[in-house]
Amino acid sequence: MYIVRNKSCVLKKITLLILFLFIAKLYAQTSFDNEFDFDSVPAFKACSDKSSRQALRTCFDINFNRHVRNFFRYPLGDQEAGRQGVVEVSFNINEYGFVQDIRAVGGTLDMRFNAKFIIKNLQRFKPAIKDGQPVMVGYRKWISYRLSKTRRNITTEYTSFKRLGN
Image 1 (cartoon, helix red, strand yellow):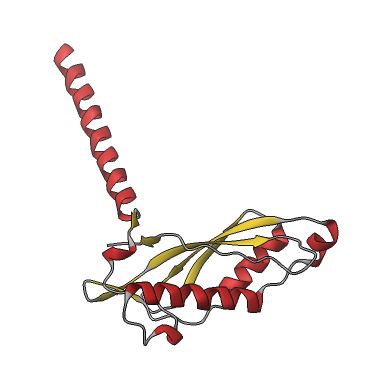
Image 2 (spheres, rainbow, N blue to C red):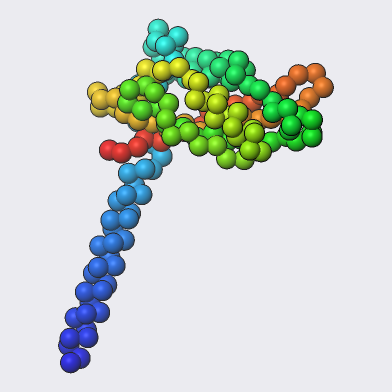
């Protein structure tokens, strides 16, 4: 009888170990990668003539910020109430160059809605390439909603890539 209990305890431990390893593998597949792990990074069509990684990154930031300025609308209710905030927007650029999986956190509901609208209206990109194949990557940007007497303050910030899948 004692041996049977011991075997069931060992089986439980093995099952838990297998479950832990499976979860760890799933987590590892969605870990953050460095942009230098990619052969080429996503690019606006206007940046297709750039060859160096730094030039591509600069061109991406310039075009992204221009797009944000063109589509930025301070929510009227928040403006009248004097509410300010920062919205963190996460999105993926898939292997076909389209934006998908837009998520917004922070700010007010109207600020999040506007931030999603801005990202949803991004043009199609040249996709990232890794090992000769197009891959999906994720971006995280911040859009600040600050009231100013002189002009709207719009800030965005470049962060890291996130490779999805294999």
